[in-house]
Image (cartoon, rainbow, N blue to C red; front, side):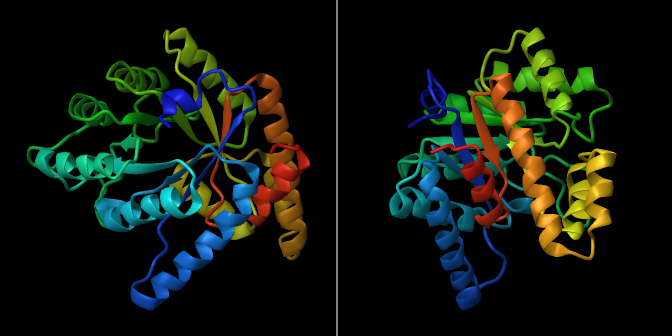
Length: 294
């Protein structure tokens, strides 16, 4: 089922998850994939309409992403969505890959510009490739029948000079044919609500789906801040640090915060919830069990 159909006239909020190809090769990698699917079998009881698979920096996990997407479709019988970026591939290589996805019966992709390859600071478009996500969206739309999602940033893309520029970039992606916007993770719902209104004020009508990550450790806080730039409300952060020597308490605090966050978003009327479970089922299961979503 395409994204445009998944989010059309849904009576219950659409639940979706994002996973990533594990690191490693050979037997080590296969063991991690087996564990990942054990976790996904647990999450499957919440009837996800979609599971997306990330795409490593510089396209490093392109084939692993493709294989995982196929396994999600064929083994779990859940609709998958493959991530794809502009990094390191020219138009012919992009076309070859998206056609391969489409020919495999996969219907959905998340089109991203992508981060600069490891060891570099600035994104450099590949020769005869794409410089921006809107160009990638247009190319996929013109050459396939895939349904396309794009990313949104409630706290502004880190590289955007200002919020208005970031919103105009989003509008370009939507104008080229995007069907759904999935947001970067955030911890202050007011940021999402303000962003949602700004998006609607631009005349964008497609679904805006909030991205939810559940903090489960102190080290996770530092990674979140460094990688995504998302801010963590001081009261929440302080509470986590008050219990930094008690891992079980930190897990409970993170879960309780996410439950309140999700309940508020549902009251706001979001069409879906997109969870970043970090390839683990426990925290997301606790949240979804608490709010009785099946």
